[in-house]
Length: 451
Image (cartoon, rainbow, N blue to C red):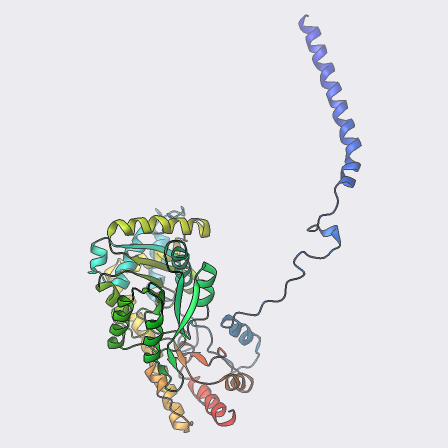
C-alpha cells in the first residue's frame, strides 16, 4: 500500500467516525433527558426541600441578646449582654499596641501567607505557655508542656475535650454550676459526659465553697474538672488563694484532672501574674493539667480567634506523644490555624517594649471595669435600692451576676431598653459613666416594682 492509499483510507475512516458520532449524539440527546428523572434535591422535583422538616433553631442565648438589641430603635438602649470591652464612649477598642504590631507585620515584605504547621505558630505557642505558666516554670524548662495554637478559647476547649475523649480513661467532666453557656455543649459534642458541681451561692451572691468541696469529693477518681482560672463567667466570683490551695489538695488527693479555662488573664485584676496564680499553683506541684487560653479579651482580638491549648505532662517523652496525638485531632477538624492573629500576639509578647505597652493598656481596661463596678454600687446606694449590692464590687472581671430574676430582666428590657442575659448577668465592660445612672434607675425600678 502506497502513501496515497494510506492517506485516503485514513481520511475515509475519519469521515465515518465523524458521521457516526453525530448520529449517536442526535439520537441520544432527547432520550437521555427522558431517562434522567428529577432527583429529590433538584429544583424540578416539586417535592419541596429535603430540609423542609427542620424546625427553626433558637438564637444563642448570649448572641441573641445582641440581635434583639440591634432591632430596638430606642436611643437609650444599652447592650450589656455580650462580653466585649467597650470604651467610655461605648465604642469597640483596638489596642494601640495591636495596631503597632499589625503595622510592623504589614511592613515586613518577607512575610508570606503559607500554611502554618498543624500545631500553629511556634513562637506563639512558646510565648503563650510562658505567659500562663510563668517564664521560670519548671514544666517548661523540663519540656513537659506541649502547646498548640487553636481557634481562641472555644477551639482550645474543643481540641482538649476531643483529645481526652479519645485518650483519657475517664470521660466524665465536672463543670461549675453555673458556667459559661457554651461549656456543656462543647464538652458533650466532643464525647464527654458532663456533670456539675456546686459553685455559686445565690443567697450570698458569692462562692458556695462547702458545696464545691463536697461535690468534688464525691466525684469518681480520675474525673476531669473544669476550672475558671480567674474572673468566673458568669458570676465574677473567684476562690481566694487559700481556697484555691484547698481545691488543689482535693483534686490531687482524688487524682482528678484539672482543665483550666483561662479567658481573662490580666483582664480581671490588671495583673497577668495574679490572674495566672491558680494555674501555676497546680503546675508547681508537678502534676498534670490542661489549660485553654484566649486572647480575645486581654488583647481585644475577638474576631481574630487566637487561642492556645497547653497540656502539662509528668515527663518530656509523654508531652511529645501527646502532641503527636493532638495533631490527629486537629488535622481533620480544621487542618491548621490562621496565621494573622497569632503573629500579632507573638510580635507583642517577644518585644520587651511592646509587651510593657500591652500591660499598661490591659491594666487600663481592667481599671475601667473596676471603676464601673464602684460607680454602679454607689448609684444603687444613693437611690436606696433595697437589698445588699456589695457583691457588685466583690465580684471580679468582665461580668457581674446581679441576682435579678427572669421577670426583672424582662421588665428592664421592656421598660428601659437594657439588654442582658436572662440569668441577670451583665457585662460591666459595656457600661460607662454616662450609662450607669440609666442602669441604676432600671435596677431600682425592677427591684421595687417586680417581685
